[in-house]
Image (cartoon, rainbow, N blue to C red; front, side, top):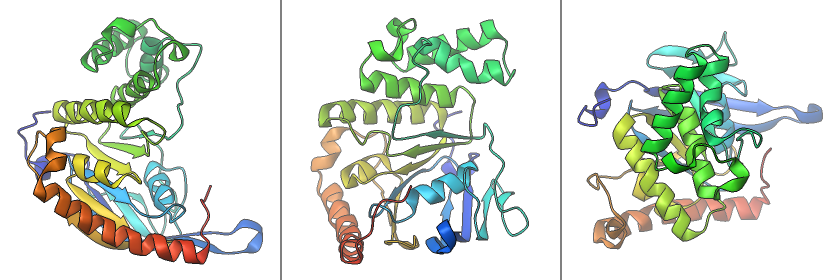
Length: 282
């Protein structure tokens, strides 16, 4: 996909309208998301920030089709994913997820891991899938590690391979749940640059959950700040810093102003969560 295409012309537009999710463990209703609405354009890097346990991952899982919703609706490119008569979205290759914890098969090489999805789904033949996997891993800077196993490469390399494994399916939306949470600052910086290079090549819509406010501003087109549980949209901050971006951007006055604005809104919710004794939801 051409990186010169306007965001509004790309596929992967998400419309989240008045979504509510109530869990009922042991007969005790727990409202994780309450009347939450967001509009995400196709090709947008959408960053979601909020306190731990506020329902961010619940929202992501509803888009992916891992959880049902209680009320509201979610559409992808004007097609209903889930709503009043369809409480859970069908899982599909148009929405691929990369979780916090690694999910590569340890007994398969990086190339075999990436080729696995299209081979099993029979969208590509085995040889074609392996060839495409090799090409995509090379684009991600992993061309010399195709035959290595996940345990033989760094965490950053393994995480890059996971993202490539998601992208080989040509998804409309890439769903990332704090993918760089446990990484040191230097590795995270390299991963940010790699993700932005991937975004420039593909134009895929990115729905990215993070607690790192600098990460949210550096990567995002918009930062959606959500409330402590139950999750509602509190504020949307538009990031008008031009692309491509470099780490020098973070020392600019515009960046620091955006960081202060986001930090103020998130801090208010973090205080509420602390006072309420919120705990991380499963």
